Length: 309
Image 1 (cartoon, rainbow, N blue to C red):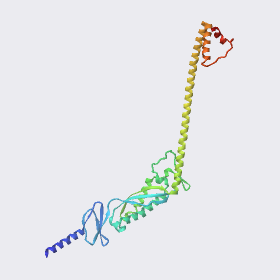
Image 2 (cartoon, rainbow, N blue to C red):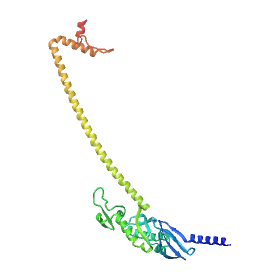
Image 3 (cartoon, rainbow, N blue to C red):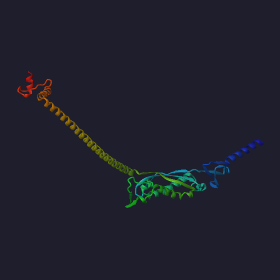
Image 4 (cartoon, rainbow, N blue to C red):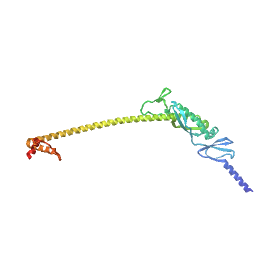
């Protein structure tokens, strides 16, 4: 009889011990609640004991958590409607306050929705679009001073701020409202900024027209350089042709002068023989194969043929 009783007692002790022991790992932090109300201090990592069946362990993340908001359509200060997609990182710094104020991570996400969306909307609507998309160190490529008109008032570039300052201001204002929920807001960033569909179409058209204008300018400059190169090439070609023609005339003139001198020397040696050779050469050039030469018998051109007969 004693053995079964001992076994039952041991089993009950083990069962109670298993229900009372729990482990919290390094990535967690926990609080113990009794009948739904927190009791005791926040529990850190390690093996711990609680009252079985009466107390419950509520675990919370110690690591940094992610928050992603829904994209919102917000008008900027210069009346341009844009889609703003925001993200943030946060962590639980006071589990007890966190449990009593929002209870769960889903509740915390809901609180962050209200806080961050409100701060981002105020920040975006109070700034120009150019401030949201450019850094504070941005410089125009053409070096010209940029000015923007808002409600009829000109705003100079030095009066603008960059997106880094805007994000820092958003983080500071949103972080001021989170400690009451046991939350620390680590970072807030805008993931994406885009125009609404109607504005986007007009922006794309303007971008296309600007690119076409730049392309036309490049094309015009290219045509100008092409005309300049072709003109230079034609001028150089004419200069080369003119120089070559001049040399041809010089060589031909020198050759003609030399030939004339040779002819004159031959003529002076024997005028009759020179005339005879020149006439024979003329016959050879004038009378071709299957050709006919019609001359009168008293022609000087025919005298050597008559003498030959």
